[in-house]
Amino acid sequence: MTISAICSRELITVHRDATVLHAAMLMRQYHVGDVVVIEDRKGKSVPVGIVTDRDIVIELVATELDCKVITAGDIMGTHLVVVKEDAGIFKAIQLMSVKGVRRLPVVDSAGGLLGIVTLDDLLLLLAKEFGTISKLIVNEQKNEEKLRP
Image (cartoon, rainbow, N blue to C red; front, top):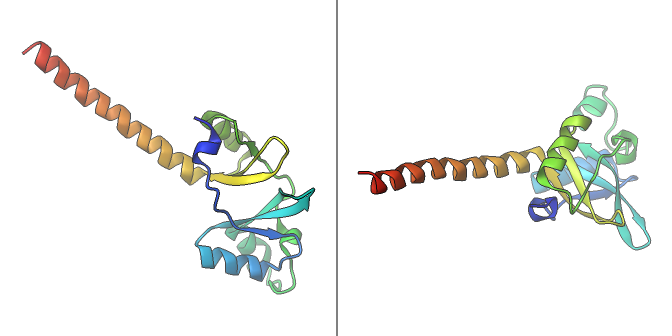
C-alpha cells in the first residue's frame, strides 16, 4: 500500500505571509493541529513548511509575541520533510522516525502538494491491520476444531 492511498487530501494551507493568528483560526475552524505553508510555483502548490499548534505555543504564546504581526513564514520549520505519493507505508514510518516528525506532506513527482499523512493516520491503519491479524488466529483455531474434533 502506498502513502497516496491513506493520506488526507483535505489539508489546510497558508502562504508564508499569513499571520499566525490566521493560521491558528484555520486550525480551530477545521479542527486540525497544523497548516502546511505553500508557495505557488508554475501553477502548483509546493509545500515549504509546516506550522503546528505546538509551534504557536512555543514560539509565540510562551514568548508573548503578537500573533497578529508574526507570520507563518516567521515560525515555520525550515527543514521540511516530505514523502512522495508512491512511497510505501513503512518508508513513511521510517522517515518520520529518523527525522523526528509527526506529519509528512505528500507530494507528486514534481513536488506538488497532494495531501498529508500524520502519525495518527499511520497508528489507526496499523491498529486496523493488527485487528485483522488477530481475527486470523481465531479463525485458524475454528478451522482446526472443524478438521480435528
